[in-house]
Image (cartoon, rainbow, N blue to C red; front, side):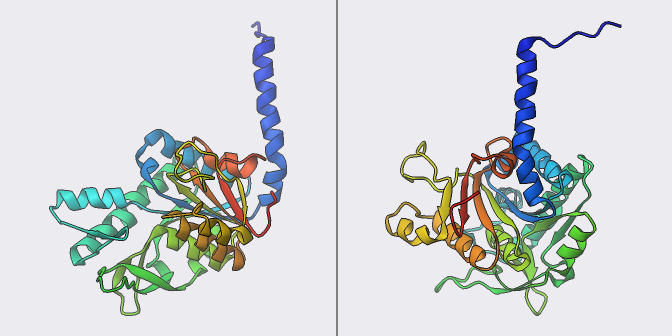
Length: 301
């Protein structure tokens, strides 16, 4: 049998791939055995190609020694099921007013349909994944979230977190996939904002990184320009100034303020990435340039 030798162009391509692997090596060494909490949610959750890209990234992260923990959302699926059941809902400041009927559907969709789909996608990649919600092992205790004079129903605010189950899973080499559902002291079920769940878990574990996969490419230099440049590195000391100038504005303010709080509580860095970019997790974690905004105490890689 005659083996065809690679031509010069194909060899150059292979060399560039090898160079990429070598570039990733120091980051793999640095983050090995470190905990990374990823909030997975946004419109890209419903793009199969991007979903596969994210799952591939998570599998590779696990294989090179990181401990990924996934917290997912799923508001679009909840809305779709509610529409099918002719259950009307309303939103106040981006929060869904959650009645008895709505919380039943929300738990079914988040802790059932979406959670188990993500678990299966990871297991299809030979990863050991376990789907749980904040109700399992009493992981997330909540109280009713208040919004001025508006009754949001069963929307929860986290009051206590027990990381025993998460640690047990990660120490046994499982990937926890967590639905943002919790219960109060009486056992009543509540829906919780997935950003807040990821933030609370990262704080409690003092994770190496908290990563928000979102529909935006991090903190923009000019938020009014959709195609404007992104601030790639941001120290927490600069945040108040950027909020005052309006560079950090709207829905990005709570994300960044939570990021500052998480870092002060022991999380090494927080990353805000555009989940629509293929392999954004790997680009941010294992390349010098990154692809989103990294927030840390000081600007360094």
